[in-house]
Image (cartoon, rainbow, N blue to C red):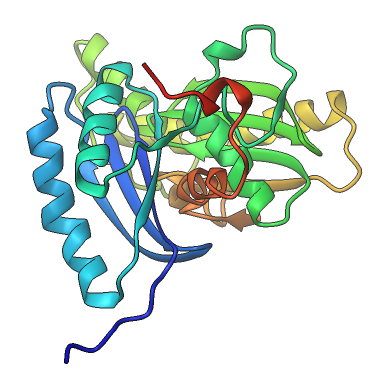
Length: 273
């Protein structure tokens, strides 16, 4: 007789970003494994199904049996349909979609809530899942974003060019600037064009982060704010920006997973057409 494996509360959090798509597998709130894929705007349902069956399903079958509850946060609208269809096909249930209409009970103190990126809402949900009740999440990705929250209220934030995208924009639009790799410079004065670029992008980002955090905290009174850094490029500022003391690389996935621990809003209880 085959050994019966224990059932688990498997959850798959999918974060579709502009550059990368990250999948995180959880057992309840326990993070198990993640996968990173390049985001392609022309990806098909069949290709996503192959990814899921080739990467995620074998890992689940090795661990224990149990259904998988998926949740999706996407900032690439063209990807929503293919991912919803593929997740539904592979796991037999439609994913919970994180956006302004269903954001884990967050109250959005924002002029046009539909403009808030799902990743930004996920970051705040992730902070709450970690027991952080007020503060600022700084996400270093394609863009560098600052999101401010207190209690259960999302107040908005700031969007800046990301480290890599800022560097790429300069080198693509200035004839005499060649693209260079990110690397911390030795000083504050560049003796070559490459050094000058790296100082401007990296050291300049430290100044931007420190200035904006100071301005946000002076404008928005908070008792014990926590400044939390996340994103694929956050490690470049680790130990460099004094305000950034806590780093959580998987914060967005934690927030998407946390959505599954909250009841859906009335607008999402009805089946999506």
